[in-house]
Amino acid sequence: MAGIGFELRKLLRKDNLLGILQAYAYAGVIGSGPWVLSIVGILIVGMLSHAVVVPNFLVTQFQVSVTYLISASLIFTGALQLAFTRFVSDRLFEHKDTLVFSNLNGILLVTLVAAGVVGMLLALTLFSGLAVVYRVLMLAGFALMCGIWIATILLSGLKMYRQIVALYAVGYGIVVASALFARPWGLNGLLAGFVFGQFVMLVGMWMLTAWDFRSPQLVSFEFARRESRYPSLMWIGLLYNVGVWADKFMFWFFPDTSDVIIGPLRASVIYDLPVFMAYLFIIPGMAVFLVRIETDFVEYYDRFYEAVRGGGSWRTSKRCATRCSTRSGRACSRSPRSRRLRCWLRWSPAQPRCAHWASPNSICRCSTFRRSVRACR
Picture 1 (cartoon, rainbow, N blue to C red):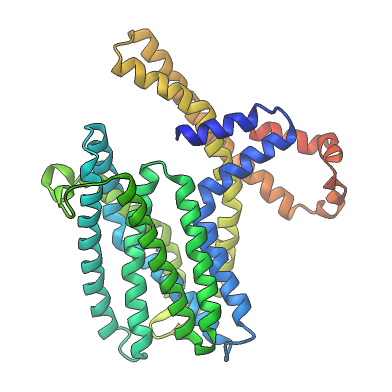
Picture 2: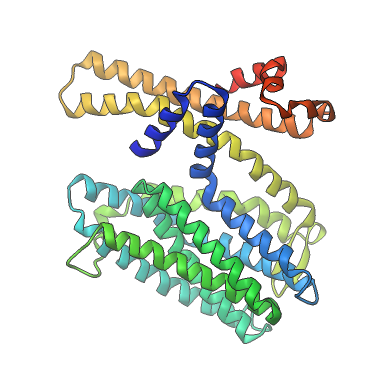
């Protein structure tokens, strides 16, 4: 993340409140931008469609359908995400850059075919009572999102964070525009706009990789070789995504806490909103973590890497490794503090008395704010 760390350090060198706020805002956008843009895009489509799509329950069906597409595609590709990133990392370390694009095509081919087969089976069984157009759009959306997660994790591993945020902004901008244009067609129109936006995103990620990693070979399957499978990473990726969504599925499919939305898809009103709010409160913590990792940890990690690879002394390597451990622990401990500050600002009984915080001078004079900021730094 050399470019990201350079930008953050430049902002923090301003040594004023504006520079600190800019650094954390920049880190928040880079660290949380893609999924925040996803959530905001779907919410905007829902809010602007209520007056046109009749009945309004169709908007809820659209949002729930998209949520299930996201969860199912993440779990379906979980076993491939980290393992493929490790494969690409090894090839770049060996200076075999030409294998990146061809293996991306190979894993996308395998993923899209497998997602198409599984999606077709589900469309013919669990969704058999629904309209054909809806089933086709759900199948296309599931396959496209499986490909998007593979491409996103690849670009993340290649440190293309700005490009990822830009592609998600363009993609979900197209989702909003297309869905609003097609909303007179109800649920199918909204879903078609979403699928079109995902298609544009996947093509954009594919073209970006093709431009930066040109290869004489179109498709290759080196990632599927036995020595390139990395079973531990495959299990970690799968179980991580299952763990993220397990609690939602429990509430969704327990009759007392959920309602039927469309076909076999259910939603839980009493659980989905608190989880959504919790995800929003994670953003400041992620920003703090990214800033600390990029400004403290990375500096000593680079020194440690150079000492190990360049034949540095044992004392130098040990000192850098110790500081890496200290800085990473510090970054992990400060993230929860920022979330506590955020929750305090949101839910404190004294919130109405904090209206005078509008001016920077008042913010700086507030002793509670100064103590909270020191805890987060």
